[in-house]
Image (cartoon, rainbow over all chains, first blue to last red; front, side):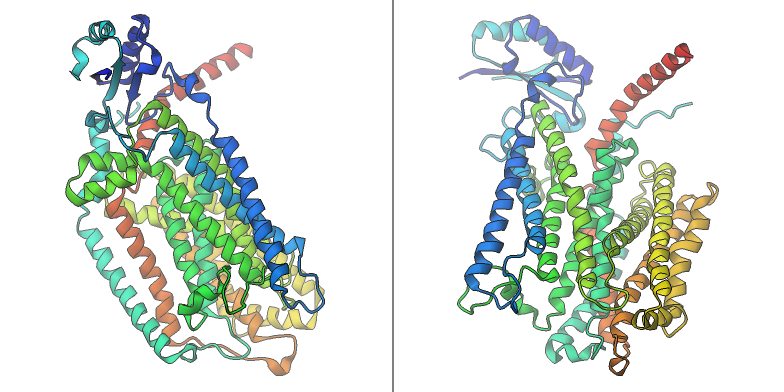
Length: 166
Length: 453
């Protein structure tokens, strides 16, 4: 099992500087996790987080919602054979409103689902590596070291900010 | 000289104070609103026991205060999600302490508004008959009915608004999880979904909120447009109008902003959040209210002018009853409350204070309730054939239920503010962190412009 080192910093700048040192010391970026009580916009790994499918899945969700709406309105109205006084059973203008609403609903639900999935929320052990210092406004840096030699390097780079390791 | 920004622990303690120590003001608000809700529950029980005959509705006025309340509260719901989404999409930085106050209004106003069509059924326990699911009774909803559109529009908007309120709440729920104990901690732990505040999580959260904001704006517009079509799809005088959709949406945003200002003024006072809900927020929302007042008046004038100019007998009967007949006190009160007084109060910077915007907002809310009443009752009371004309007078049951909606809204809002931070803590902190960077950027921009000159 990989060893974990947790370091706590008072300011985001200190934490970002420490993560830079870790990278220079050869710690892979996938092993470094920064936790904060607010987003750090000038964080060095920001570009790595860009690969998200939330927007794309919202569009897919919208299409699924629209398809469900068409099935619900068109197929069921025909099957039930509503009495419409000679007017058409399927009316695109009116059914279009239901289709629009369910398209939006599909997109909303897909956005929520994809956000929870991509942010790795609501799963067993989701809050591992967490330290309550985050809620006090500190920035917590967690390093997972597979290689014991890296553990020493990381501890040296983080210096006196290390609060614990296992 | 610039003020020193509050420290992290001060922000936490100030904004969590309503959750930890709500104070006497909160208890007084809950007690009073709870009593009003209790009275409404008594009235509703009486109505269930005796039937809809205890209401003042009768031929030809079959929709009255219940549908007035429905339209009014759906309109108020535009305060939150729509305004918050617009402010997020446009990157208005001053929005940060305002958004959650607004988003909570949407959820509770929608819940209350959506109750009325169900109550109006007379036997609300059979509401599920209208839900589209296969059943042995051979009943199926007519998707061509605007009332069925309402079901889908309000359902989508309510679910979307709950999610839109919930997503930015997750980091604050994690904060509460860390600061609370016992069963409350269990609740917050469950709701925070294991949030840690990693940069990946922040990125995904902000991305999802942005996507949601873009989706929710057309949904919000569609909701009140569809509510307007409940009326406009008939050929009743002064209802059958192509501009009813935008007219209703404008009125909804107008009353929504007023509700938001009023809620902010109350929260500021009850929870002593003067450092967070500042005069600049009231000033900016006051300017929005002023703009919407003028847009609302433009639509109203356009609606009434075309009716008058057409001089069609059916339309003119309703027009006259509103402008100079039995409903004229409500009509002129609406014009004064929604246009004359707010425009005066909000046009001058000296009057656009917290007190000034709050007074204007109260008047707008009262005026918009009258406006909803005026749209519904006079048209129903005077159908095209004069032999069928009637009148309407509300009973104590309807008036108590109407009062109950306001009490219920205040009660729900108070309970929400007791359980969750009413100002988004992380968004506020983020705003403080990025403000210096933005100031630097604007200084650099000004310097570049000066060099170019």
